[in-house]
Amino acid sequence: MKLGVFVSDFELTNDTLDRVGPDGVILVANGVYHAALKTGGNASPLLGKYSSLYALSDDLETRGIDPSTVDSKVKVVDYSGLVDVIFNDFEKIAWL
Amino acid sequence: MGDVNCAFVVQQPQYKGETSRLAITHAISYQTVEILLDDGDTVTPTLNFIGEGVLGLTRNQTAMEKYGITSTENHLMNCCLVDLEVNVCKEDLEKYGIDPATLPDAEEMGADVSINVVPMADIKAKIDAARHVLIF
Amino acid sequence: MGKLTIGCFPGLVGNMSYDFALKLAEAAKDKGHDVDVWLSGNATASIAAGQKHLKDYSTGEQHLTRLMEKGVNFCTCEACSVARGVKKDNSVEGVIWSAMHWYLGSIHGADRVLQIGGE
Image 1 (cartoon, rainbow over the protein chains, first blue to last red):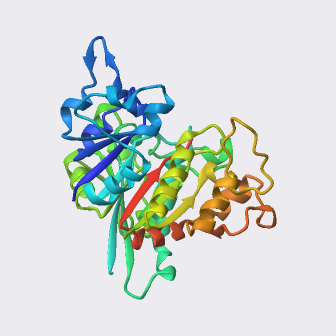
Image 2: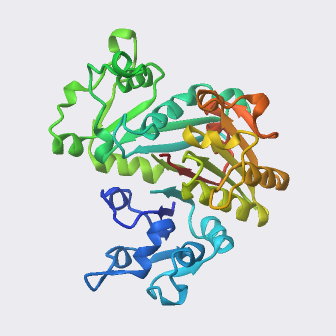
Image 3: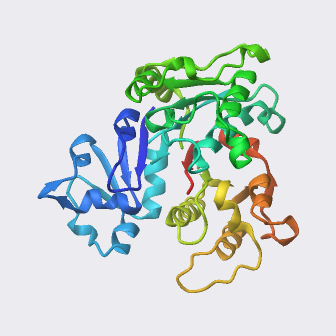
């Protein structure tokens, strides 16, 4: 069953995400920085690990990030779109 | 609908926050969920400790004496008494130098199950097989 | 349409994980899904009645009431609530009071479950 994991932090202090091994990642809260920032000139390693990547537009815009500027690998969705992602793209979901 | 299997995954240590303890108590409540369901329907959790979640699980805890709260040790013994499957990551115990023999056991109290120390691959298999995954 | 069960454990004021849980619940309900929200731990303080809705403070009462009017089911952990001084006769009307097995019962019938941890 396809598992989607919500990532709500930027600095990932443990390797739970890797160990759980999701099929896709949904970036929310401070997790949206993975879609928008480059650290030391490098994009977040998350972007290279998962083929299904989403970021919540409300949380990007709350942080002053223009959704059109996020990494092209990430699909930006609003809350309504997020509901569709949850029910259509994954069979189970979890929060980190 | 039958049985719904859930993987509870605890990745935070015990005590500083209550979330990691609530994972245990919520899992234990599978014993009484049947009163709310149709005949034959059940929820079966597995309770899995990984990463820093393996911290705070050992015997000889004095949480009640020091802070007036039921210790995680007691909660884990209750897990065994209600036949809840508890899995603790072998690699993480080794990483933190925790001897599996220091984990609680409720055999003397009549428990039929013990805490399982298993490879992460086994816990991953539980996560993959579960209908729902709850990370604490 | 399906059913979404959310386990909401984060504290009330100033914790945007709590806000996220409610906004997601509303969005799912607006799209026609059934939604249950289980409040446990610090989130149970959000059912206290008489909350003052100050600017810059996210509060539970207004949001809970609006979402319940839309048909979202909220259930609070009775033990967690009373431990925090929230009394049944002084709580937001319409919230179910129960114990942890309510959450598991909701999970049994859910198509998707999102457990959002506390602190």
